[in-house]
Image 1 (cartoon, rainbow, N blue to C red):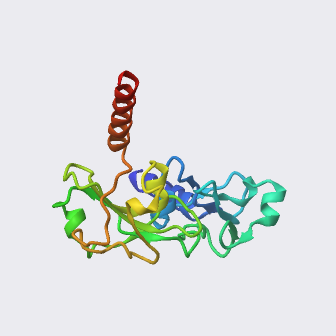
Image 2 (spheres, rainbow, N blue to C red):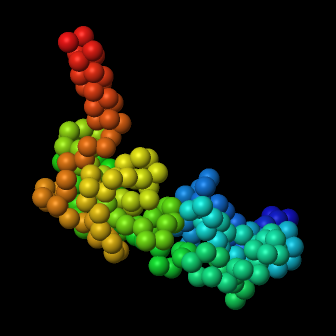
Image 3 (cartoon, helix red, strand yellow):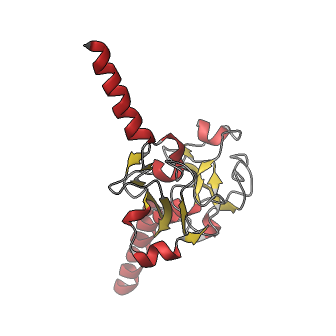
Length: 213
């Protein structure tokens, strides 16, 4: 009896992974859908098909069954930067997309952390897709937790950092942000929330003093 249960379980698993299936995920809720898609199991499509798609929408990476797409999107889904349909194998949409996607060293710490000292770390795919994305290094000089950062410029700017790129070292190319933490090419950042708040406070005090002068 146990033998038959194992056989049934094995068949069910193979049907789940190797049937008419595609990788189905959205990086808006699961960043690894964009950065590490090769580790996803393909899931059976609602409609029996192994025609799959990968697309980027508002910076998010979406993977699924082509039958889910409306006609207009499906017809236009032949662009290697925006949307691509594949059908050569089940789960064919588990490759990094677009293939030219930026890859950077991504970490955070203080000026003596591994993030600052290990310039040989492996660059990883940027979680948000942006054409012309860059890598960055940011250091606010305070030597506190998260005061030193390496990553993708799109991620930093989403958090209101490096919007003015003169506050950070930026570069283009795979893993180009490997420069030493004490490099003079890295400016002291003055764009964090704490710095902005203190600047507003100083301005407010100065205006008050002028009012009462």
